[in-house]
Length: 295
Image 1 (cartoon, helix red, strand yellow):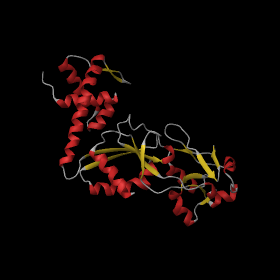
Image 2: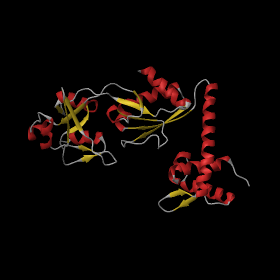
Image 3: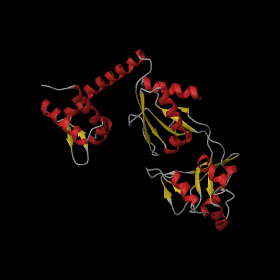
Image 4: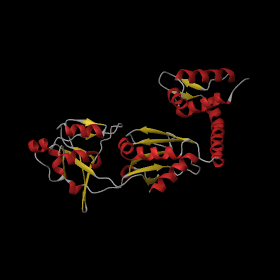
């Protein structure tokens, strides 16, 4: 029986994701090529490892038993290969990050540029995604989010300064509809709503002294990208609730006006968050050390 180690590596990845498509994306092959490799492995072992339908992939009992035995061995191999970084001048490896879009654009991009110049043998994979992703389940090293939405059981380090939100609209909009003077007045205005890909609405939060308010706004447009929300505001659709840094140039030019500024204090900014793993990869340790040194 001629079976190669790579055959089992494809099996482990498909079993992990329960998806030929996701496994193919990870190894850089087509789904049909990965499926063909699994089919050949099943023929050589003379046992079916996966149940396949047009909508799902699941392990058979034999596949589950094989995965329970083989997967830890591949984890040990990966850990051993990573430990070889101790004998290199600079570490090698891949860092996988899930990053909220504004965090990537405003803060992470320049940091990664500097990091990859310092560590040319480390590859950083960035998934720009506003969904609240389970980074442990998705087998990611870390994520980037604003501090207010971080999961409590995660470790986190700041990657940028504090942030402020701003409620903005054009002078023409305010001339036509009036200017809100307190948060609850926003319910009478056309507001551009932001909704996460999961369907969860993004709250408009306000704070002044001991008062904290979340306003449920309404309006003619719902978006899933704050850049589009800002563009809508610039085009007179209504009020947008965005990071002030995004709108700063338009505020200076007079294209936009901000309101309720005294209700929008500074907040903790974007953070890199990650699980408290006992054995993080050498590449990820280097990234953490790099960020801590910058702070």
